[in-house]
Length: 238
Image 1: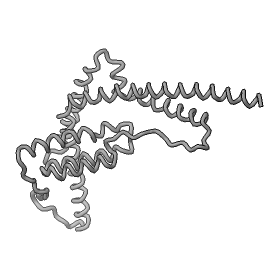
Image 2: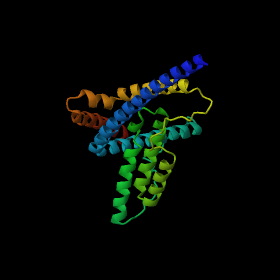
Image 3: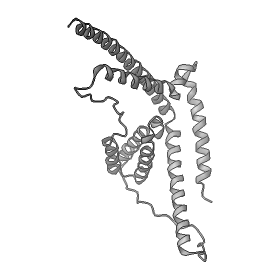
Image 4: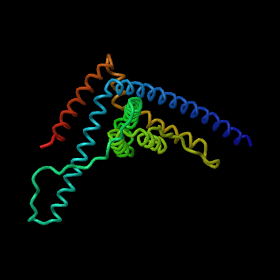
């Protein structure tokens, strides 16, 4: 009996120690994420025009590549004697919906906010959401170009519903028969891994190593301007 009580006290001490370490890791991770998210929000706000233009050009480039692929496929179907018609074949675009100036302002505001929320750069640590983010930005651009506020709002509601703009919770349910000490150790290992990844995020490194982190805005702007210039050359009509 005495040995059981002693073992119980040891387990309780270890559990309390692990729980404190777990809470400490949670606090550290929360602090790192808050700092990083705030800094990235500042970057996005300063570079909103460049970010949106880069995404618009990327979407256009993908459309052009898709059109070329379809054209080559059609040529292949026609056989080697097929002759390409002169002139460009105009592409049909969805008709633009007319709206009042107030609706136009609301449309632009919603579009800009949505683009920032689902910009692929926000999901650099979540590869499973990168493709979804690219698809979402492409759809947002198309709806914005149509000028249909209702359709844009409906799609924004959709991406909100599927959780694309919401931070996923990493918490896991624990069944009653799971050993608590083992669970705490697993949670500590998981949080240590997440904390390491959060600290290795480039924007966090900038925040913690630059004498003035805001100078990174100019570096990032130069990067996006270079990307934009390249995308403009790639999408320029021949």
